[in-house]
Length: 185
Image 1 (cartoon, one colour):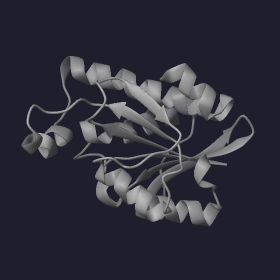
Image 2: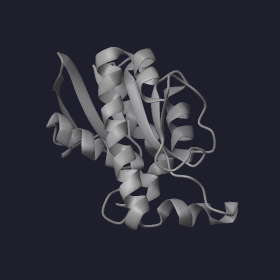
Image 3: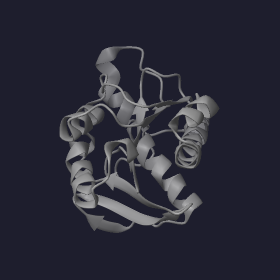
């Protein structure tokens, strides 16, 4: 069983922003795998299905970004999912816009959503897919930058990146994390 989590803020007000790359990837994955993410439980929207004989749960925590781990740990505990089968997708300012990176494990860096995930799971040992969004010219502009609505070419670039992130999830499930890293990084 796999828990695939996209980090973001509740859609509607926060749709189409840099900080919702995780949700956007889950939306692509939902279409690709024909799994509707419309059920509510444990402070999250989720959907489940079977892919290559593996149960898959797609999750979009509804706790707002900085408390994402609260929802994730409830799914992990309820379904008894090993942390190595929890794949988290999120935006990353330290990666070039439109680039994705898969990692087996690692710290949260400056990402508050990932800080919550690491704190709640009490480990850094879980796979993640980072979607590069670039960074603003000045650090003081960070909040406005990540919550800004996307437009034009950047929107198209990040849409392609979130589709690549969705494909990378399938690569991890089908081929394992090491081969998926070689294929996508």
